[in-house]
Structure formats: structure tokens, C-alpha cells
Picture 1 (cartoon, one colour):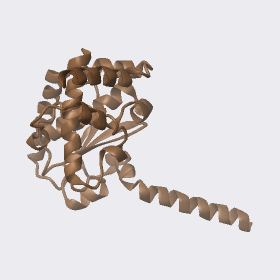
Picture 2 (spheres, helix red, strand yellow):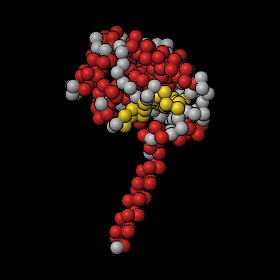
Picture 3 (cartoon, rainbow, N blue to C red):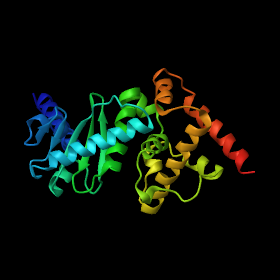
Picture 4 (tube, rainbow, N blue to C red):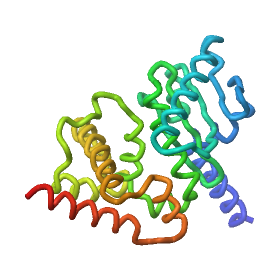
Length: 247
């Protein structure tokens, strides 16, 4: 009996610990049961925001999707979009001080937006992340899409001036950037370095598209089709091109 009781208590503690650690994911899953206003089936707007927020959010989504279509072609992803208002909501959903974020789990993708900070650049950026997950699937996004490529692809439709580079990427910076294949390598505590990584990823992925004659969607189709060397091939071709132009 004591052993059984111990197991029950241990299980309860484990479940409560996981629930606490992933409380923001639990809130996302249960968004239908929250007081957020549902718009167009998969968009949820904080009830703390004014009524005209729906019109602003709708315009941002249309503008972002049009920008993606002009650059990459029509998008197919339909992530759940959650627009947050107060600091408490930002904290509860794990967005904190960021203007936007994509959170993807095996069953769905969620785009979180800070109403006060998000603009068409932020929305387009996050929707490209959602498109990548949609086209390759959860597992391949986790293991076959390096962070530098994921961010660089999103940066192609993100025109925020602080992430524009004044110089073209050189071979050394390209090789440094393509080693940042995980979130832990791409982001650190140094804000200036993080901004630099975004800038270089934008330039590097642009060079990849230029020298490989590939589009984002064709690359993702190859990843989805289990072409395991596709990223290595793209990096090799672009590296050779940059090596030639640096002479």
C-alpha cells in the first residue's frame, strides 16, 4: 500500500511539474475555452484589446500573406494566431518582450503576436516559420531544418531596417553562420551578436537562393522527400560561389 501511494504521489508531482513548465502550451491548447475573441476560425484576439483591434489584425495578416506570396508564392499553412495585449498575457503565453513568435508542437502551430509591437514585418516573418513547419512536418522541422536557414528564410520577407546588412556576406561570415544550426547556437545573451546573426542569415539565405536556382518551397519539398543532403549541397554551392567572388 505504501509503495502504491508513493507511486501515485510521484506521478501527481511529475504531472504538475510538466504542467507548470509547459503552462503556456496548455493555455494555447485550451484557447477555445479562454475569453479571447475568436475571429475567422483560427485567430484569437485578447479581450483586453479594443474592438478595432480585429480590423488592424486582419489588415496585418492580409498584408503579410500578400508579401509572402509575392516573394515565395502562395502559402498553405493555417497556424492558430493569438494576439496578446497585457503584460500578464505576454508572460502567461511565453511571449514576454518579443513582438512575435512561432511555437510549434506535433499537432499544430501557433503564431503569438504582441499587439503593441507587431507589424507586417513581424507577422510575415512568423508566418514563414509556420509555412516551413507545415511543408516539412514537425519532426523534419526539428531535425532537418537548421536554425540559420529557418531564420534566414523568414528574414527575406522581414524589412525591419535594424536587420538589414550594409555589406554583402563574405565567405568567412557565411561559414560561421551556417554552423549555427540549433537555437542554442544562433541565439545567445549578447543582443548585438543576435542582431548580427539575423543580418547575416538574411544575406546568406539570399545568396543560397541566388546560387542554387532553388526556391524556398522547392527546397522544403526536397527535405520533405527525405533528400538528406539538400542543405549540405546548398551550402557547398553557395560557399564555392562566394569563394570565387572573393578572389
